[in-house]
Length: 133
Length: 280
Image 1 (cartoon, rainbow over the protein chains, first blue to last red):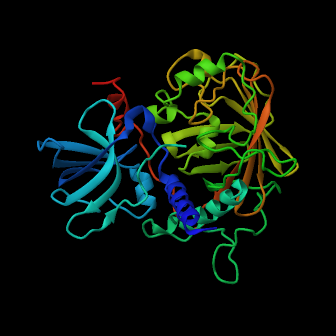
Image 2: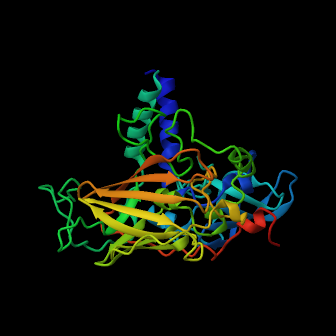
Image 3: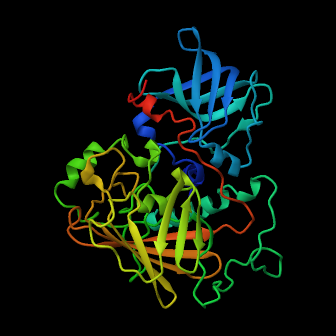
């Protein structure tokens, strides 16, 4: 097994490892895998809810316009099993979120990574919904 | 590199990286868990039994993340099913009736998946969901509470026969009766709603949308192999949707660290209808 293969396998492993909390909703019906998004902004609201937790941030889009964007996470129950709580993030925290935009053109997306700007801490690791296999 | 090797290595990596349940809040001691010399739960300890000597299936169970390449299951064992695709282990695919092809096209983006709609999941979605389920074994019935979408299912084990088709109203979960065949609990279920209602969420066996209809008789053979492992062989006998019956294997592992079922109210903050244009 060469390095490249090993890297691919670890990638697959991470993908699969994320599965225990992934599968609630139907990703393909809501989000467009071909529309990636990356935004930084202050948290205006953190909803610790089921079937998905949501983070809302005020952020600039590609045109420079500031708007409120919603990012979908996994279910609160699944995040809780991984050790996260409703206190893991609070309004005012500045985060960088990478994800996939909603198909309907609204200011919503599915969050794949959430990083706290001041510390670099990765929140809700492995907890993105992702494409259900 | 051979595919089977990839599967094995990937599975090992998955096992190593899967999040531990112990990351949850402070755990309470869980009674009845056999311990090994190292003080850890002994998952291969003998199957626990009820006072009448039957295997006791009670406990909180998680699906395993094990996967295998199509056709690679040992001889005589049904292929493993996955939440996304119960037919993944069949080299030739599932034995669909001709009309199913069109239905699967319609279901391709999972728009009407009951899982996403907060409706009751299909029987194999419930068995294979990443959220746990709790089996509560009582003398005359067995109740299964599925954390995902709060499915509650009763399996009558008091000797009553399976009802005639059409006697109960069609049920999302079907009507289930169980009997013991040695150490195997054999559960038969009929009177399902099924895909032919054409109602959103009806008749989904997996995330891909493999259907079942009101003609389904489901047979599940539950075997608690040891303290830690539950095997369920599920036979789909649905002549309206499939040209012949077929059987898949589900594997589940006991939760033995004292962690609990977690409340999951699916309509609490349901955005799916909005994001798919069905609600303002």
